[in-house]
Each structure stands twice: as C-alpha cells, then as structure tokens.
Amino acid sequence: MSKSNHKESFLAPIWKQNPLFVSLLGLCPALAVTKTLEAAFGMGLLFTFVLVCSNVLISALRKIIPEEVRTPSYIVVIATFVTLVKMLAEAFLPELYSTLGVFVSLLVVNCIVLGRAEAFASKNGVVDSLLDGIGNGIGYTLAICMIALIREVLGSGMLTFGGTFTFLADLNGGEKIRLFMLKGPGYDLSMSFFSSPAGGFLVLGIVLAIVAAVTNMKENKKKVDARLAAKKAKEEAAAKAAATSKEVAK
Amino acid sequence: MIKVPWKHAFYVGGFLAALCGVLGLVIAGGDLLTRNTISANKVKKEQDGLRKVYGDNAEFSEAVEVKDDAYASIGKYWTVKIQGDEVGRVYSTSGTNSYGTVSLLVGVNKNYSLGNIVVLENTESYAATLEEKYLDVYKNAEDKESVVDNVKCGATFGASMCRDMIKAAQNHYKGGDAK
Image 1 (cartoon, rainbow over the protein chains, first blue to last red):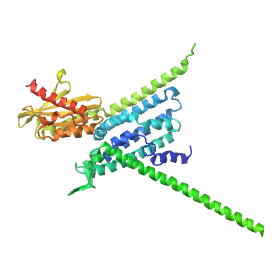
Image 2 (image 1 turned 90 degrees about the horizontal axis):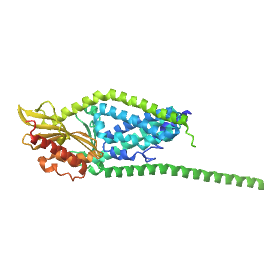
Image 3 (image 1 turned 30 degrees about the horizontal axis):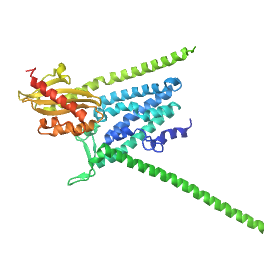
C-alpha cells in the first residue's frame, strides 16, 4: 500500500470519518463518561489501546481466521485486550478505573472496535490497521474530550484536574487543580443540568449539528465553486466560438 | 448422505482452541503483572476509608471476619477506639444486583446509631446517580436514620441494596455477638 494510503488510514478517522461525529458510533460511552474532561480523556486512552491492539492482532491473523468463526474470533481478541486494559487500569490508574466503572468492560461490545475489526483490519495489512487504530483512537478521544470540555465547563463552571489522574494532584501538593471559568467569588453561572444525562444528549446534539453544518458548508462551497468554474469555462468557450465565427465571416 | 468436511472442522476447532489458549496466557500474564498492585491498592483504599469513617484519631482493631449467612453482605468489621474507649465499629459490606456491585465501609456508633459511610467500589451502571441521589445524601445528613430508608430517590434498586447493607451492619452490632 502506498504512503498516501497510510496517511489516509491515519488522518481520515480524526476528522473526515470521525467515528463519533460522522459515523455516529460509540454514542453510549460518549454520553456516559463525558461528565468530566479527565474521565473522557482516560476513556479515550483505554479505548485507543484496545482498538490499536485488536486491530493489529486481527490484521495479522486475517488470513488464517476461518470464515465461519470470524466474528467470534474478533470478540475473543477484543475481550482479551479489554480484560488486560481493565487489569492495568485497576492496578495503575485505580481512580480512573473506579470513575469509568462498567464502561471499561463495555468496550468489549463497543461498535467502533468491532466495526474497525470487521471493516478494516480484516481486509488490510498490519501497518494500515495500526494507523487506522491510532487514527480512530485519536478521533474518538478528541470527540469525547470536546463534549466533556463543554459539559464540564457549563455543568460545574470550572475544569478540575487531579481527581481521576491523581498524579496531577500530587504534583500540585495534594490539591486538585481547579480552573474557574463560569464560577468565582460572588458569581456562579454554571448550570448543573449539563452534568446530567439529559445535558449530555443536548451537548452531543448541538456538537453534531455544528459538525454537520461545517461539513455541509464545505461541500456546498465546493459545489458552488465547481458550478462557477463550469459557468466561466462555458462563457469563455462561447466567447471563443463567437470570435472564431467573426473571423470566419470576415 | 451428508459429507462432513472433517479436515476443515478440525482446522476451525484447532484454530479456536489455539487462539483461546494464547489469549488465555496473555490474560494470565496480565493478572500476574497486576495482581499484587491491585491487592495493595485495595488494602490502601480500605485503610484510607477507615480513617474517613472515624477520623485520624481513631484506632482500629484487627479485622474480624463475619461468616454468618444471616449477614451475607458483611465481610468483616473493625472495632474502633478513641483514646482507649470503644466508640463503634466499621463494617466492610458488599452487595451485587443486576446493575453492578457496591462495596461500602459502614460506621456504626456504640449506641447503635449510624455513622459515616465510605464507598469503596461502585460499579453500578448508574453509579453516579446512586451516589448523588442516595449515598451523598446519606453522607451529608446529620441524622442518618432519617435518610437511610429514603430509597425512592431516583436510584431505587441500588439505594435499596445499600440500605440493606447499612442495616445489616447496624443489626449485626446490635446482635452483640462479638461482645
């Protein structure tokens, strides 16, 4: 596969084919773990690890996996990496593990992971699958972090760091790092509604609408530009034809 | 007569067995790597939790295991002393329902009134709702007895389970089997 295809495998899922914003996959964790930016980022990291590892292994085994047991094999591979990531998170990032709760285990049935295994890793080489995994991981992490950023700022009026990644609090002398944005001495503009599941739906809906509007705007601009270019070319051709016929008449 | 493709069937079976075997070994390796750290984390969390229930001045006895089917949710308890006087107990309780597992440290005072609780584990699928609607309300209440039964709070299943765990701790202390 060419270098440009490698690049496409990596870059496309980050924005153009973002698994959350464009394909609308993985909506359940996108609503459940986006209450805080830290939790969303942690989920993104674990998700990327599972996706990259499963993509690479499935791609490496794609020629020897029997057709009849393709999907069960993928699920066994994904479940293994989820179990592994669960154990690692429980051991080395216990606060993140307890914050994400059941949603770490639910990565086994995450439709992006299974979808990329089926649609990409089973048909492409190891390098491309690796890049696809990293690209989708980054794309999904960015998407849920964007939602979490909006929800946390609007819902609590500030950004808090150190609750899930406790080493950040340790670096700050044991205190959580708080960046006050809509809250301060004498004023509090936060709306706790945005921390609730309903607020999550609303924010997701608005972000999806903005993404769709931006994408449509770009596509429309391309169409208009193409139409104008065609019109200009037509006019030029007509002028040229008129000039030629004039010369012939002379 | 149907011809069975034995060769292919053996290949499929062999592949699945080999895949599961190898991935099983990977999981076992992960378990070996993380087991001790996870246990140490749990012990540390438990010790930190004990301090949160009765404060830094409290002294805790060795944990006493509870193996009584009538109190199945209770794993063990610690007797708490402050300046040499017994002030209550802390019970380690755990419960599971169809939404997940909750583990609590429940403080019960010497006069059998309810004390603080600390959440050690909450894997309920609506964990945040349970904490916000029931556990946090319980923690912040001056009179714990008045809120412990208020389980129709928006997280009824989890709250009912937690209430039963808290009551089990209280009843166990009242039973006085360790006095």
